[in-house]
Length: 221
Image (cartoon, rainbow, N blue to C red):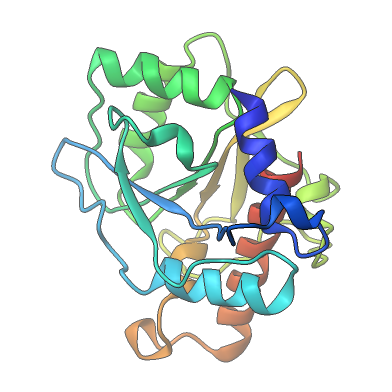
């Protein structure tokens, strides 16, 4: 399945061969709809604002709106990047567990945002997807913090939550990062419209830049 994602990625970069750009293709992030009671739909301005920033700052041609997808949807594999957020519970079925693992092992990427109250449920469910793997902390030296924007200290702190330090965790399939989980940072809320959380401009900029780094990494590694 990896070749499907690679073909899509090439078609999104402006300097790709002309034959790959017709008809025009645009990249979007697919918000993951899940069961269990959590508000998977939280932050409707987050993804459109991040897509606009990615479009402005990189050669990637993006859509203006998010997609929404469930794990069992037949078009799941059309989306190279899934976004999971919310404040409450997550519950995957056994079929969803198997299919999400297949998606991630065959070229997909999951960006999970710790929107306060998500942590316990996310860790439980991702362990069901990868019982043989661990969430490992990504150090500031990891490449995702280096390009196109540099974060010498690693993941930026956007919202206080419990006042703990922000941590970036990942799951690898072989050498490829397939899950990025930002904990005690909440970069997703930093993508929202300015009037939603009233974040300082520098906080919003840091969140958007970090989000761009994640997207670029997901599409090129």
